[in-house]
Image (cartoon, rainbow, N blue to C red):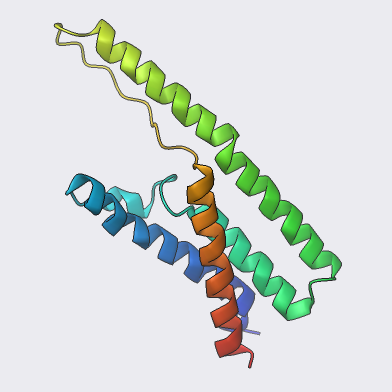
Length: 148
């Protein structure tokens, strides 16, 4: 079996790629600047982590059944990734934002060069929901195209 026949993987990768690509125009609408680094960075709307895992999980359910142990494992992994993205990684981003603010406040008036910490490490619940919905939709359409 070729990797191109693994529609479960294809569904997840398509959902991930779409999520990463969508970040560009959404960021442009907010900042009026193109930020091409968003294609490979974590964080932002929609969550590519959620889209990837939900796409794979849904495709597994469609492929082997939603009552299978494999789907249960995929679902559990999906929940862990989404919890991590919205909880732990989001808090790390908030901490980085506050530390950067403190550095800027301390350095006011002095030409101190401090490397800024990454502030967008995690996702808001809305960003994770965007990735979840994208993963479900892409997996469903991929299944309809490749399997049916």
